[in-house]
Image (cartoon, rainbow, N blue to C red; front, side, top):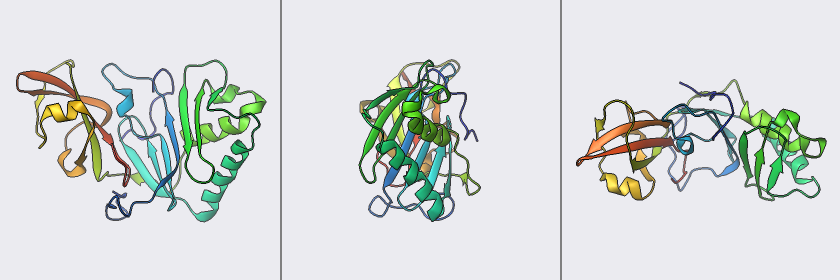
Length: 227
């Protein structure tokens, strides 16, 4: 399982701890980080899992190029992240876009608890000017997040997306209940039980159906998340 993700560069259920939560009872996402990474030939960056997500119940999800891991933070650990967010919110003149200087890395940091934040940052956090160091520090720590509780995450649902196109090699038959055109029109939520044996995240599959060839991606969804 590729949880850590590849070097940051050009582009961007419950865990097995318990049963999958239904949308009605799923905890809300309170902190989310998306991060770019270097794409290999054929990969689809927008289908990659979230880089980091903290939910209101203290559960955390960490994604790489294809799969995710999940765990849980203790109360003091959650409060530590909230304190870092408070330092970011107190920055004067904070806008929706931040540059850390040279570098093609791109991040999107969203906080949905308390005063909302939605910041797009570019460049290397290590080279950030002092005025935006709190943002750079938080992004760097979330992008490299690790925790003893992390275990492989088996999503209850995936976002299925298809577009006409070809990949190198052969193709597999379409095996999902909905027709391909429905997945071409927009991402569709499908149960994790039907994706066994399929590549997930940024790794696409080549699929043949009705005389057409499709590039199909399956993005892991968090508990209660919609495509």
